[in-house]
Length: 226
Image (cartoon, rainbow, N blue to C red; front, side, top):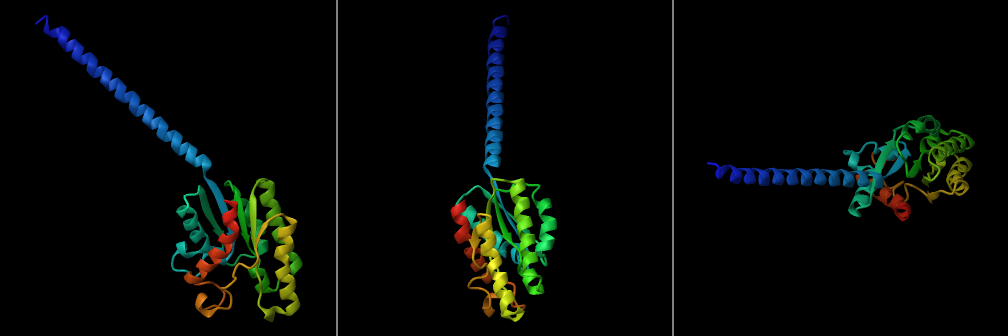
């Protein structure tokens, strides 16, 4: 019996050593996983799309059909570390956006896409007022995130608003883009506006097919900034 105990002791030592090694290996694995998750989180950048019903995807069957969601799909297919945040709100004017933007700036923003003004134009709000409001939004974003990259999407209004008003309204966007060193999408609804089969019954909001074209209009400008 005395010879058995030393033998058992050796076995127990090996078992405990093995368990200790496994525990250390598991701990190391967990640490590595946490580090990888942390690194991934730090690398991820946010793209905030701030706009009205066109950004929100009004009237579409699925939120994934809205043009910001389509852009997220493009980003994911390229395995780029960007997360799209859809800050669209149906019916919003530039004045509404000016008062709402700070709430959305509570989260980090690396790229800011401003899509507002269309509702101002449809309501005949004075062009100068719209321009001041859009500039206020831009200023708030720059103040919060000085290194943010910015895109402005141009809009147009129907000629029934009056030729001078339509022309003055159209000029707001290139003027603001140049003043603030922003990238410009000349006309968000290029190749969609006025085409019946690409718009919903209201003739204003794109269908799912139209939203894909809108997404491409933005993607042409955005992709070079990623």
